[in-house]
Length: 133
Image 1 (cartoon, rainbow, N blue to C red):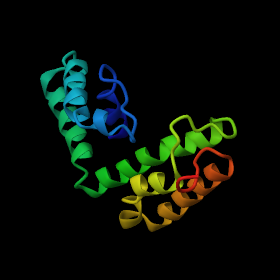
Image 2: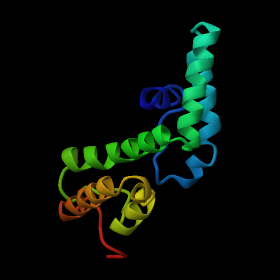
Image 3: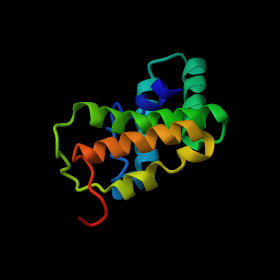
């Protein structure tokens, strides 16, 4: 499911989670990208993959919600591990990142604790700032 979700970004590109303008049409752009990618497959297989992609995007099933949680953790975890100290070109705040990831606490309280630790560790490294400071 996570791999199929990323197929939608082949031609559309990945839209930053904090890019509200880009997110406004990312579903349509990624769907067009996915359809282009899947057009090389047999119709039945393409339809099955499209169905799984739509399930992930809708986020209704337990599998899709878990997939969205894992997808939401990839960027901040990678950022913490690879970004140099004090690298925050977008000026992201701890509060904004926590708000964007808050959906995790409803379905995975243990992963929410892990998420908060990643964000706190990132702030200590200077990757996110607190409030308006």
